[in-house]
Length: 364
Ligand code: DOR
Ligand code: ZN
Ligand code: ZN
Image 1 (cartoon, rainbow, N blue to C red):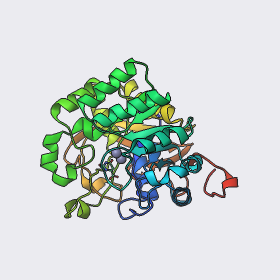
Image 2 (cartoon, rainbow, N blue to C red):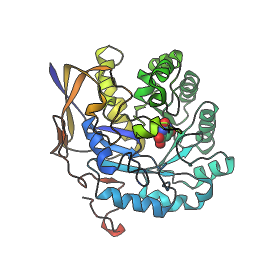
Image 3 (cartoon, protein in one colour):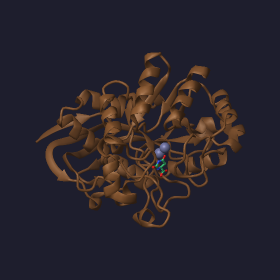
């Protein structure tokens, strides 16, 4: 057994479900799951109920977060055709804008060009635009990045045709970046059949050839590993209208370290994909005095029983890993050790920090 030290990880794609989905996850439980997975900064998605597409909803979510988060959290603002007038007012409290071009969980969707243009014209240039774009929608996003000469980040790329297009766009010097999830790297459509609704998410699990393409591009085209941690309860997953999405905060690092052990990527590349690149791309602050201690060479089988997330299950149950997060230190404080989350609710920092003038508490 060896112990290695990694930087605190940054996961730029999580669903913490506040407001409206607190029975699935909340700020305190979702950030506890993050720490258990070695993640010290998370960005949370705006497809909540109501969505974070008005200043009122965004500010209310920020207030709730300030007293509840155990690691650093930033919120995405959500683009919506009815709410384009709010975009400038949303920006100060959000780390980035999320645009959903394809069907997924929740009502946020942008399917018309006038709204897309409004987003690109109105959203401040210093803040990133991220997209849920599948198949030819990736080409739409690349076209907008070129037309407005501003960066676009593609969430959870999952197909060969998409990653190859992004590689072509990067070759042309276009300002695009992308993330890939562990579930799209470690599971495929055969697992979807085995797992039933527990293996259903958007984008759906790909073919073995799609998965192979993602691994081929992990060394260069892919910028980040992001979990798309999307907790739903098992009762919902077993119900008549099962929502798409799977949790992933606690398993992401362990699975990726397995790939390092198997010689599929270097530890240095893992650190770039899971810590340095996400921080750089989204302009997230460094966290001095922060690190993650991981034990390697300790075989374990992933199971629902150990899941910290409120949802209480993992699509990777039954898979073997050989690493374990031993301790997480955030700004000099032990926040996780040997299965126990020690960080109290409210001890994390909310991003971006607006300070006391904005009337927010819980920020340091
Ligand atoms: O599977 C998914 N679930 N994909 C998404 O894009 C949204 C997410 C959710 O919010 O549950
Ligand atoms: Zn998505
Ligand atoms: Zn998502």
